[in-house]
Image (cartoon, rainbow, N blue to C red; front, side):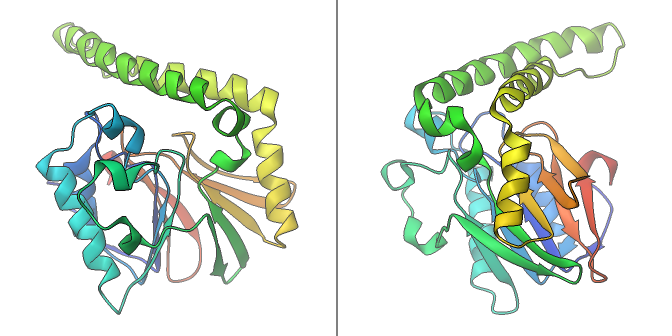
Length: 248
């Protein structure tokens, strides 16, 4: 267990991927136990319908995370916004849970003292995810395979006394970078924020935590809870910060 305490205005999580073998459900639970917040934004791919459709692997710890999230939804003192991601599909077919209870929506405008932020998972701006779903699914299967290779490789690294190194994360980042560059993903995100008259945009989807400014638009990405174990915190004074579980 980590020893920390966070008093936040808003917590933003994405890409937990409950239902996959490599989801860090116990770490998510530990992280949530040490946070208090007025608003929780679940920005897509919280549950992985793709993996569950392939009989991915739902564990007791995954149920605990889902129950924890539902408890926040039932708490009148916490506002919970649940946004839909591209992996949040077919959930009614693979889960014995009333999915309608989650009230998933495609996007949300988050009010901040510095201006409004458009919050959306990000897959809507990804050409592969939108127009070549078969390729996105194939890439997801390859990523799951690489995670297995990654586990074996790092056992060898530990034996050699070396630090953890993620082959799968590097490969995914490289592919996302190539696709993103050809797809002008960031340019689309910035334009979407401008079209919505927002100061910034908050996404997930690419599994890489980001905090930067582009064309006077603040772009934040919450990363994931498969490898990065990262989230976005909004503090009471309105400033945002990327949090990494392993650094807390």
